[in-house]
Length: 300
Image 1 (cartoon, one colour):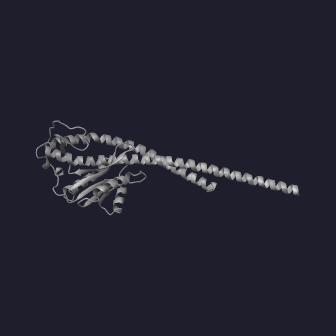
Image 2: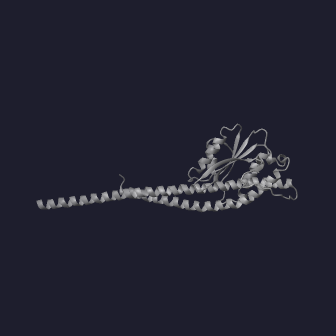
Image 3: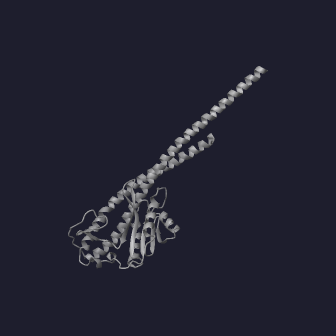
């Protein structure tokens, strides 16, 4: 059984760890609230852009209006933007999105290249010898649209140059503080599908029958909207991943703190038993010594 001194050192170590995990839980709780506010603030712009895009897509020959709407007949190469975290201590957050991405693209019928957002995803892909053509890490704690716009621009350049025939976005969708879902969806070409006579698209809560007046002309408006909205999609999904990461870290740190407190309770109980046993042994030694001294006195 460990000595009382060793038990005190273990108790002190567990207390220090519990303080760290509690602090990380508090920081993550604060950050996740801020990210959720940013997600909600960006949604109206994204939905309005989709409404205009849907209206333009109703026009005859919309496939030829912009290159980012054109589906390639032959898929020769695919680009995947993988969004993960820069740090660990977030439970299975990073592993879940990387595992889902590899399951989707490991046996893909054409070459797959990756752009990684976050060091954890980059490291996992490199360990598996995947081709990473670019990586973005150390984003600000609350990134702005300008911070992530280079990612969208690079994806657009890869698609329009022909180096990638499809671009996918792998991220983690924030559903609640305890549920985060890995999502893999096509980013380019933009998909606008007809469903029972209605146009549907990503993140549209309702269809629109609005009448728009375009100035100077719809081609120029379409060119601006598609480029900007592609960047908005990347930005919004990165915010979703950030919210998921902070929520996962908050939950993981809460569990770690609870486990540390349970361990601390057990260690304290063992320490009290060891200390009580030591006191009992000391008392027995004193009593034995006193008895031996008294016996020796009587015999003398």
